[in-house]
Amino acid sequence: MKVLVAGALGFIGRHIVAALRERGHEVVAAVRAERCGELPTGVVPLACDFERDLDPAVWLPRLAGVDAVVNAAGVLKATRERFEAIHAQAPLAIARAAAELRLRRFVQISALGDPGDGEFLASKHRGDAALLGCGLPTTVLRPSLVYAFAGSYGGSSLLRALAAAPWLLPVPGLGRQPIAPLHARDLAALVLAALERPGGDTAVDGVHDVVGPKTMRLVDYLRALRRWLGLRPAALLPMPMPLLRVAGALADRFGDGPSGSTMLRMLMRGNTAPAETHARLAGNFGVTPRSLDQWQSLEPAHTQDRWHARLYPFGPLLRWGLGLMCLLSAAAGFAQTPAQVSVLVAPLGWPEWLAWMLGYGGSAADAVLGAMLLGNWRTRLAGRLLLALVVAYTLVLGFGLPGLWLDPWGALAKNLALLPAILAWRVLDDRR
Image 1 (cartoon, helix red, strand yellow):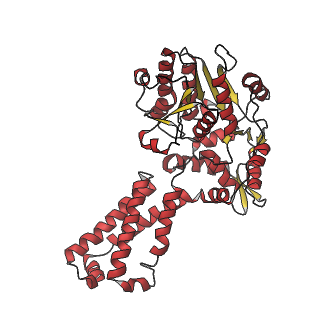
Image 2 (cartoon, rainbow, N blue to C red):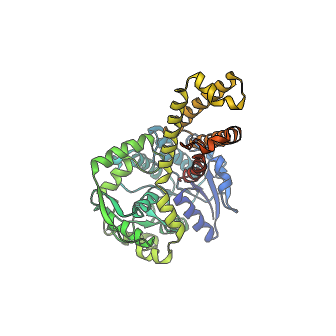
Image 3 (spheres, one colour):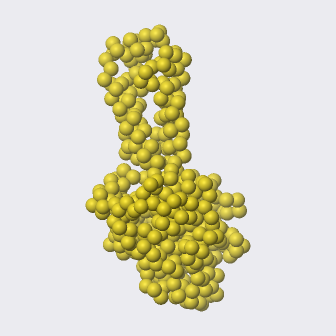
């Protein structure tokens, strides 16, 4: 079978692609053009843009020779217009083209929850309803909290970070929120089962809530993750909900990770389904998701898992710290009078106009980079520019004014730690 997978490089999409290839199916991955190079060998790339490719006519030639479609594309934070395009309009355009070509099935990865908790869920559910009326056999899977032990993403990474916190275990409220965690490989198995059902089999049609076999409290899930990571038990640190709401609002505006108001509302409401849901999945799909304990025994933790869990919060912390450093450096630079600048660089023998231009120009660059980092705007470009600026500053002044290495305030010596910090942040900034 030839299957087009949208969102093939996402957390869930990667597991679906792996399951399809393991079963011997051919995969066409619909991803953004700049990410085609990330696809594994053997997967056929299809460059697309879910914000613009909203016409079925665009998808008709792309679906030539394809037997079925799986849509695992999605975003957690966006404007209402972007949510609508990615979660509703683009999937519907693909489905209408697929219906015209009489493809065998469309599988939609949606999300379990109340649409009132945010536009993320509301747009997903609007898209689900539209797909079910497109005239094509359609399976909508609405999973609860999806996790994996061989890697994590977004919310699952954030929960790992909470579980790995030093000394204390932070929990929202008292951590009593009910969840029914589902392993990503079990979700991929359900997708396979839907795709491979014989024609005319309607058991997998429609909307299906997808949950793990065991409902548990959030605090118990975090404790289980902590045990899996090989960390000692820790006392609970209940986090007041008013404080979390403020943090969620700030994360909506300045954050670059999964935390935000929508995730907080979803978490506080809980993420479960009726008790008979698990048995219904086994009956309709022939797949029985395994429990958290079973998957933990199959996928033991390694040192790198502890690294990831404990370093995950440092991505935004480093970004904010570097941003504030840039702004303070800019303020200090602008506070110098032209005469003071001339005295500072006199040993270099530069003309005064050049010293002033470079001094105040460097301060202006610091201010721009600080604003970019704190505003979470084009941070990868800001990281490259900041690295180049610090390297240039260190080389020029380090050779031209070697006495600065012994400056009691660490004018240059601090760069020995600053440069690795910038490099480490650039790694941690990749938070997909």
